[in-house]
Image 1 (tube, rainbow, N blue to C red):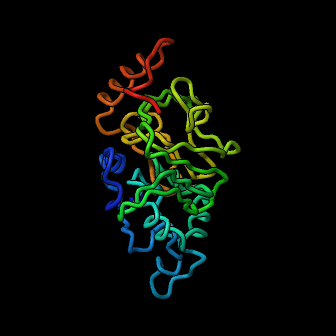
Image 2: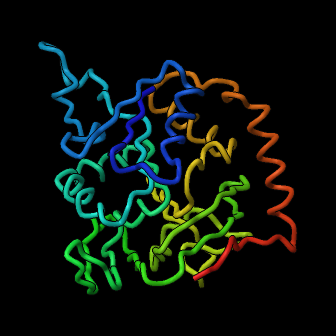
Length: 272
């Protein structure tokens, strides 16, 4: 199996790289490709670049990642990430429709909507003004960032495909729109904005959530779900167990026993 980790030089907050590290532990024979801002992403690699001389393209399976991952980045780096991804938008659309997994966590979801409305942005020269960034426009939603307001910190409890999903968020962003392609249904806590029960966006192989890493460590059923899909696209056999599965499930059920209570407290600190 093959895993691509996008922009590790930017994904340096909230321990989000642990999602990839945990997959490496679960899939010790997997190949992990790290793609920096200056490199072309593996998800958009043309078939011709995966060929050996004399091979027939019709008989060659593309060496695409079975899962591509990007996590939270500082908002000031959004333009750099968008500039790097924009030339490969069509390749990303093809990749998503192929059924392979593209997973975005935390504020990385902001990159794939139509616009990012940034209120009271502070520029390096000290200037403060609103700005609007053009997103990749893969889906019909917008992100609104209020850095001058209190950060939203909360636990989360939801459900996807009969799996109970848990996580937490720490963000200045709110996501509006995208109702046509819901991902996780909120059972406790807040959705991707303060008025919705929808958390994240899902269509074909695209899975995006405002929940932070380590999402996969916290949700072993979801990890198994993704690994099974990776096995389907790679033609390999999925492992029967996860790395340290007993401990992972023990922590999962301990967390579930609290967050599924009717009187569970989901807000952590001040909530903007």
